[in-house]
Picture 1 (spheres, rainbow, N blue to C red):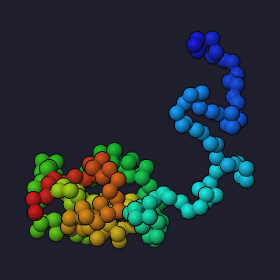
Picture 2: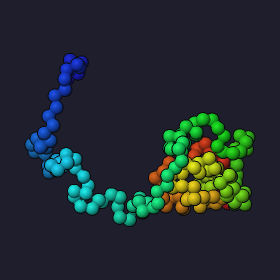
Picture 3: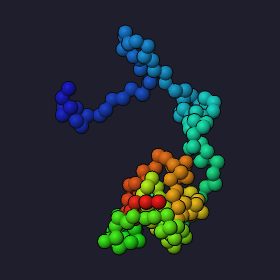
Picture 4: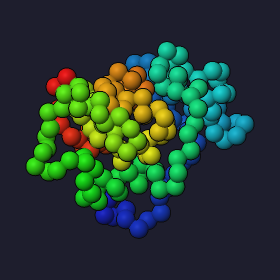
Length: 175
């Protein structure tokens, strides 16, 4: 088809989805348009209880948790801006990176002014991230000065923390 010839011409659309049919001879392919008679939009609650997230999903468990209102300037976009600012979020000298952190050293970094945690064998200085945490400071402080892998994975298994905290990486955990 010559798309250059069509440029500048109005697009003709047929919004009648009921005309959509599978080609003749297609094995069992069907399209049933959603019922939009009441509001113009199909809603999950029109068809009974939602099946997403699944009943045993950790995402469903999160919906019952208390919502935390973050202070202004603490959105994910603000965090991205801070991590790309060039500021030293590791809290260590560049020549000391990467550190080998043992359990005793990790346990010393357990407060809001100096907070380290371990996620899958890597040590992160999360001090700068505390106020950006969507679950609130109190929740993330449960991992302060210790290995937070299990707790983190329970609620955030899908989160790309390696990318999100890459500028906070202190080193490796040696136990």
